[in-house]
Length: 288
Image: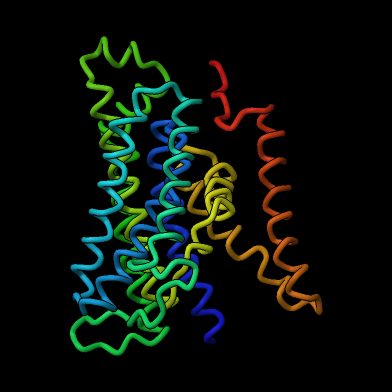
């Protein structure tokens, strides 16, 4: 039972993380490779506030979202003026800077030793064992999915799609494309910060290795497999891919092989999806 609860919590965290990336990458075609850095900042903000200052859970959630959102604003000021290719390179550089800070700012983050002893959430004197934590994760996930669904299907989402496909046309219609991209970037990163906060509360320990480029590639795989810009596709792909490698745990095989095997499996899936989309990440709509 505990194992199933654990899987449920992981699915919730990755649903939040994948849909947050889908907002910027799927709707706005902003190839933000610093998304994992927003996730990391959310986790570290919660870890530091809850362990060093005993700050309440909801304040930690909000602070984590704001810190991750501020990262997006900083990156956006510098990078959103760049073309799509250079934007990806710029965000990758920012991600590397954040990782370097997490490793080397030892007086704050403890470097590679990480931050242990992160307490479970404290809400209304509830004992957050794994089952209650699953309930909390489910509530937050449903709220995030609801917000994402509304953004995907309202006027804002349609405007963001328009500017990503045909920017000059969006400008001709009176849309402020820079404001659209900035808002998508901020909301996407803020939600990633919430996922990081939830992750820190659940694991009770974080270090920089949890937020590596490999993790960013996994999130990218979730979104590409579900089709960027598709709310339901990314949701279903996330559930499927998070649970897919779990049967491998029951195979009598050394852990040194199981880890790379999991990464190989995801790499094959991503390659297959791109191949069958005829070499493109964003499938072209069929002409009428």
